[in-house]
Amino acid sequence: MMKIKMEDSLSYRMELREFGKTGEKVSRIGVGTYYDVGWMFLARFGKRSDPEGKVRAIRTAVENGVTLIDTAEVYGSEDLVARAIEGFDRSSLFIATKVWITHMSYDSAIKACRRSLKRLNMKYIDLYQIHFPSPVGNMEGTLRAMEKLVDDGLVRYIGVSNFNLRQLKDALGLMKKYDIVSNQIHYSLKHRIPERDIIPFAEKNGMAILSWYPLEHGDLVRDDAYPSDLLTDLRKRYPGIRASQIALSYLMEANSNVFPIPRASNPDHVIENIESVKYTLSEDEINRLKQIFST
Image 1 (cartoon, rainbow, N blue to C red):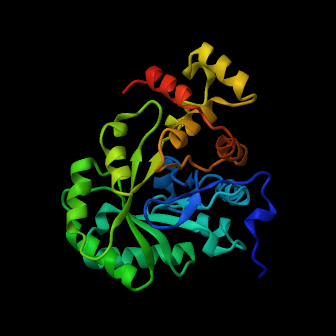
Image 2: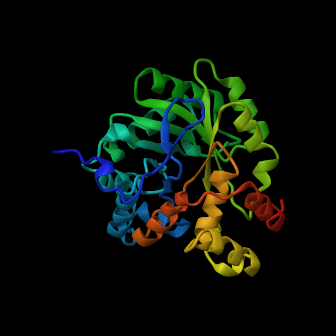
């Protein structure tokens, strides 16, 4: 099968950004494949709403320059990612997935990874993440397993998700051979608490941040989420900028190490989100947004 080159279908040039200190360059914005709790629950029984639409949405992202795709074993979407990227150059993509808290031990994490690889139809995972810091799981054993997976060539990089600063430092202290290269957290204009500690720590230590819920499940896509005078001023400088693009541009421009991953469920929304990379907010505009959306 002839591989599709992503640059053949781009309507604009997607800027790449180094992913922490990995040396890898990925799209400044990615896509997530978590849909909602109900969808995830029903997916366990093979009852998924509009899977074809979600495949189209993920594929639309890749066709428009997105290389970072995030999923998880519990999302019920790993196989959709596999279908969406068929025909594209695998080496140009950065695929991230996660191990669930019920598989947090050495043997369980190894087996979970192999199952994810099968669903993803891939030989390796770029970023394998611990989904949550389970209070009963074996963190050290799970991290040993992840390092073994790197040794075996099944995983390229190790990450975590939903770790607070203390948990992140504890996990870093357990690493023997490799670094934890990223932390995936809830971060948006309306939820700026990570700016107090996790994001500065990650930036100082060369770690990437993946931002889930960057649009607050739709709360930041409406004009009424922003003061009217702000919208007027921004649209004078950036004609056509949408509310969602302001929220996403803030995350990318206010930080050097943050990659928002809005969910890919509708191709039109995917395009709108991706096009936020066209807007470069100034320092004054970033500070104004910080004043409006205080921590």
